[in-house]
Length: 201
Figure 1: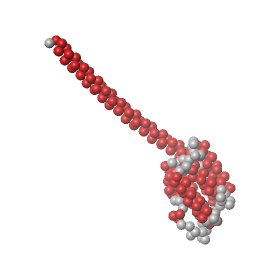
Figure 2: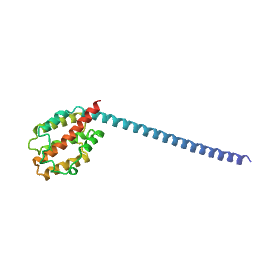
Figure 3: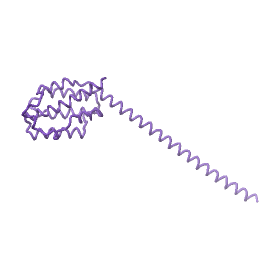
């Protein structure tokens, strides 16, 4: 029966066409998936390279800071904690300079936030002029080098300076309080200077 044979052949041909189309779609889907995976891989590589490049650029900016001048300006207000003030505080109540310096190792843009908050805090000091000018110059140098850094804000940095300012307020901004704050800020600057020297090698 020719009609039946033709109809059967047509159905088989149609099924074969559908099967081929499904296979093509599956292959196309696999190719798209592979392409997407490859694209995502290269996007990640690009982002990592950009982050490394940015970090190195920020470290280069940190090398422009005149750390010695900053420390000398701070030292003009005193270089040590007097015997009477040495036991006037609890170490745990203040932030750890090592932790602050270590954070900058991973994100040099935090330098801007640290310098800005230090400058703000020392405006309450009775004799800050030389140090304030040095901090202002440093912030200007960093702002010109690290783009969009003026709005830099970091929670651990904020927490650290909140502790320092709370301590000053609790001690009524006394001479002893400032001696202790000076010692903490000096340690931060010295640690940052050492990192800057290390990065030049």
